[in-house]
Image 1: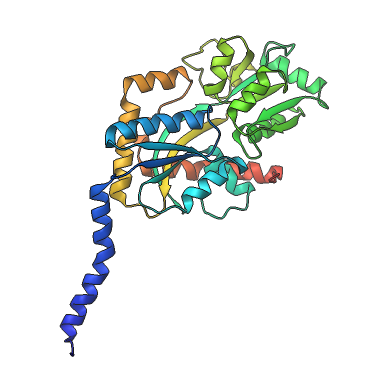
Image 2 (image 1 turned 120 degrees about the vertical axis):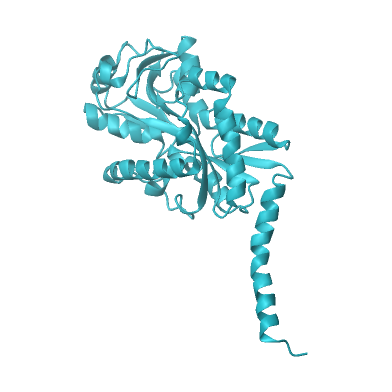
Length: 329
């Protein structure tokens, strides 16, 4: 049977429309099964906490189970790589953060592109780091810590969550600004760093308020400064680094939700709406404030705003990382 040119074009157009139609149908029925959120660090740290908070909101919003999967290693790049390779259908997401989506590409030979292989969903929160120390540290303020580090340059230690982490790169910047020297001791997550500080196994850290504030309030560690421009509302007695004697030392972590590249925009929109609802919830907001975290303004909760933040952070930090010659271990 010989087909007319008109029929051939009609069939071709129909075939071309099938993928788009499938995407529309997928977005309309989404979600119809459990969602997995990959957390690229161990349980107990700020990344894990935020992933579980987002997952609980999605479960309530979508009526589907949300599984938290901790995939650890290589400063978070193993977990992020798993999501980069996942099907772009909205059922596998990742909590990305400064480590994974800013510093890692300047240090590790990655099999994915952090700017081009993911769909930004929303910024979850940000928080300046805290400069904290073991309880037995024989000084009580930041200037005292700087002096102690200079006097103990051969043996002083800073714990952090791995090469390229914000604690590690922040430590390099701290050395540059203060003229100090100390050894970097990597751990596999914020919770293990805090355990080491509480046990006195390392001298100090540039750590998250999520894990630091509870231990500080319990009297298990000392807190010298907030590495940001303003004090924490939850602990206003802790000065900023500008106030405490190391002006300009600002180290802010952030956490966000990403999907694999190619995830339909309708699905990205549904996921973004779930995050916006989460950040508008009074109980959630109070919890984040108690943990020293800053909630982004509503206009900074869009996918476009997250993409712009990540781009700006890369432009700021990559020169510092590369100038220091940081290499993977």
